[in-house]
Length: 164
Image (cartoon, rainbow, N blue to C red; front, side):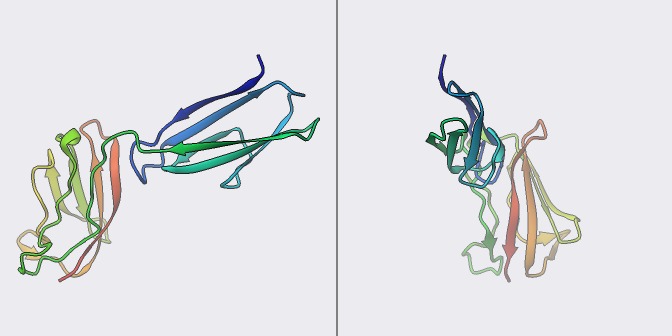
């Protein structure tokens, strides 16, 4: 039968880039041209983040176009990761604490310096980072974190700034 059929996989979390849209248009001449709002020209998009995606599908024989909007939202409760903290003893943002992890109590949190050395690790997301490594204060800098579930799947990754 004629119509537009799609298979949409929502991204797990913001910045996970694991969403996809697979579009199938049937009917008309059978030859279609696709143009997505992000410039892609395939009927399949993958590696998508949360957001709005618009496609124009054009029948090449009749030159008739149809537009479809897709709104991708995160599929699960995702970690809330602060982008900065200041462990200076003033009791304001002195610790880097990953929040909203109730669904990921078995998560592993790792923080790395710019040389790739792991300076913090928490199993089961039970600990918080105080900005030290082996008992010594780490310098003001950007650090990089990875949060994985027990299967090793990435839940979140990014950068956190430590300011002293």
